[in-house]
Image (cartoon, rainbow, N blue to C red; front, side):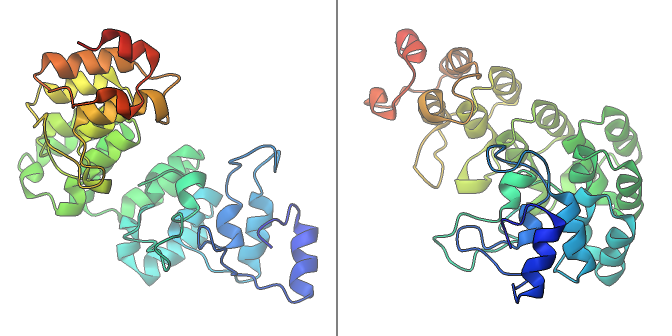
Amino acid sequence: MHFASTVEVAEFLLANGAEIDARDVDHESTPAQYMLRVAQKRHYPRDRQDVARYLVSRGCRTDILMAAALGDVDLVRRHLVADAECIRMSVSEEWFPKQDARAGGTIYIWMLGAHRTAHTVARDFGHEEVFRLLMDWTPEELKLTLACELGDKAVFHEFLSKHPDAPKTLSEADQRKLPNAAQNNNTRAVQLMLEAGWPTDTAGEMGATALHWAGFNGNAEMTRQILRFHPAVELKSREYEGTPLGWALYGSGNGWHRDTGDFVGTIRALLEAGATLPPHAEDLEPSEAVLEVLP
């Protein structure tokens, strides 16, 4: 069922006993969750949202992220009425815990993006009616982080003018929005959060701070923005026990943006801020361009 490429194939499979909500071993996700976006065009030339909608009509398991991706206003509303707290759902292990520690995490990480909310998913897919409905249901304290994530300066400044002390009362989950935004390479969101007063050294996934992720992504602009707020440049992540400079060195040769990131600029900014070059830096497999600028 996960590989059904057309409604006709899905209909045939269901008629012959296929389980509509079967979960794969790798990502512990259902067929409909796999069908929201093309991740690898060599397998599917287009999104299979028509197949996902068919499975929804046949009663498959849904969630508010799926409903937002499909642009299904009625389904979004039904989820909100059933559980208003689902407005906070994000692509994270908090909401999609792994049953097997060896699994790769929900397929939404690849289909929608890590830490994405229903709001950002609706915007990503161009479903403005869904987005407006979600905003109508969004608690006031959540609107600030959403404005940051969306890079909406108007909403951001309007909210702060009405609630100037809001950043001082952020929950731990909201504080993690900063490293999450950096992990997603969202420079504008990081800048807005820092200006609003987000704690600079909050740890996110793998115990990495925003500065770790800026380094890993080779985002020199983001790195310089964070450094303006005097973060701890020698803080080590929980996993891999690396500093932001160590993450930048490794990312330059092995990271997601190794071919497009400005790792030379990022590493120079960290060194100028007082970061210490880790011993045996070459063991982190930095790129040739980075090796040439190391002291």
